[in-house]
Image (cartoon, rainbow, N blue to C red; front, side, top):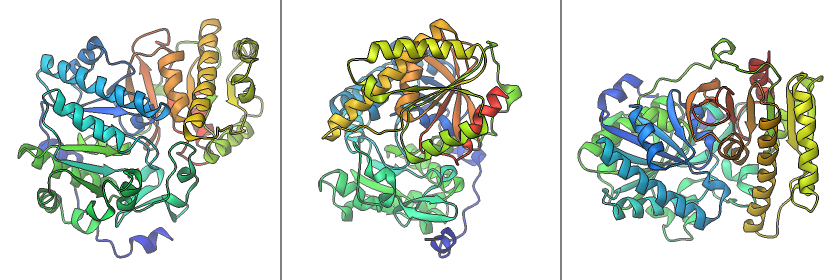
Length: 467
């Protein structure tokens, strides 16, 4: 459906500014964003991000005075048991840190704007863990997956992927056929029923529609106040002002004692804390510590990533390219293959930027669990390669393409324990981190989701970094 047709009956947006959101927010409140891969940071700027959640890490993050802290759980790449355990650990550690810092926390479960991830597991576990550690159990769970900058919008409860003016229900896109987190439903009410196995029926899910949101914050607050405790609500959004209106309403009902648990796409956090939409980081703003070339690591297999890789190679035909064979990474020849490839990358970095990518063949298992295990083993090979290269020849910068890839490269290969999100590399998408700890201090790190941007976006980011 054409976007203009979809939006023709929708009321005009309410005029709402980031400053108005900030005026409603509690200055002592901090959002703790449990991010199931690091691409959630692409919509914000100037916020701390952690890949570990020990006491000293959370104390550091809360001491920055930032209104939100990202904790990278990376749970989208783990099984349900590990995902649940990590959520519980973060809640316990964060509430302890908040007690020391005198802060009030709201927990946010940040996941994929194309609906892939551990739902309802993560929101269920978060609600239980908050109550178990003396926190106030959330009364409502809000689903806000919209990511307008990346073409993900929600209208009348239906979530769409919009490209070139055409809006496709997300259940009809390649993302819905994910080997681990696949789904059928595009209507978020039906999606909740599907993902909960019928525990929460579609008719029980509330829909917070644009015709209410665009009446303004008090209309939204009134609609939320009327919902019974325990309700899951699917939230429409087409642009930033829609998210800001919802944020103001949530701040108001929070002051009345109505707590909420949020399952969101990347931009909602920005709206909730009243942060302005950051301008893209320019080349002159990026501090580069090393003279050799940069390293571009591509692990994602979604079609958009493959197209972006092809466009990058076409735009930079002289750039060295080193391929990691997926079947060797999951087979007996893994060690020899990694050693040889790492040496090749280190040599090539002395001459300029290097592209490293896995073979474009998508190897899957017989079950979702087996597919996830293969993905972990492949990602582990990529991590091993980058770690070896960091020791042999620290690159000028690192770009990691793909959610699992960028998470593992950050926490395992570069050993980034704490970082600051500098801002987006492109309008609203692609995050630049400044490592604050570990061997990668001085190496700008770019987190690039597999499913965002246009065909030339990866080439544009590399050009900004490499010239």
